Image 1 (cartoon, rainbow, N blue to C red):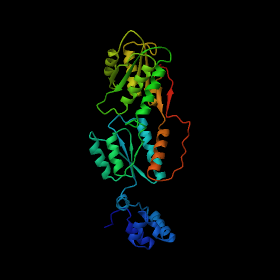
Image 2: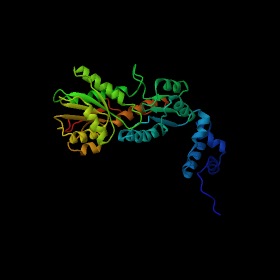
Image 3: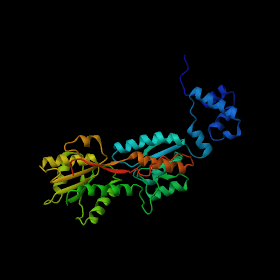
Image 4: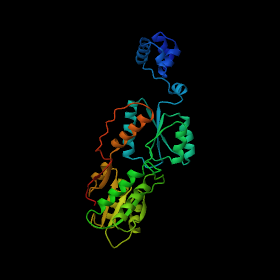
Length: 329
């Protein structure tokens, strides 16, 4: 009977390199300084020949933390931007000696933090799922959390989302005054980013002496979007800042059903600059989020937090947000 396949172990590496298993363990768990370079090179060569990967659990026991960065996601719509950010984080984490694990946050922040601490992560990347108390608990346990909170803001995504709202209103009012409204997503999941975007829309309207923008909730279907449009004030052109491109397209379809002219009667801006929005007729005006710039900032903060030197290649003039002009404003 043939022996079942199994991954190589530290014992296999030790046998090939002609050293003890303890020596292999020490070299791969941060204590290589006590051994001559010739021994270290022989162990690494044996590990490469066997395609050996050290156990994260073993390293955790030695260092008190793993090489894992946990990305915490809220239970929200998982769109193209978040996927791109995760892919980039996973690639770039290799450069700072770490790997990436994604976890969705639960309804109870305390339980989420308890689960995170059991993983002994070297750091946590928070995509808006953790409150200040949860972050403080991680910090007291020696787990840095990025992006850092900015100034007095208790939510790291508040500033970008406020800026999105400002850009949407600026685009909606570019050709004249309108009744501005905000269309939030409604799909049964949490909306960690919408409150910041709505706050940005309200601030932008107040700055322009426009009426308080009403909020409607829209599911990605024609009936919900039609009902939302019928709730909004009549008598002057509408300008709707939508949570994302999907909500924006649902509103445009509802506008066509109600025979509203775009952009004369109804102007709409989305967020995410998805391909489908650019294939729509009329082409959707939207806000593109440069996730490369966002991830570059996160990686720089992570490298600093875990003490791993990294070349900072960020460009000072790179903008996180930009307007993709279409035909719906």
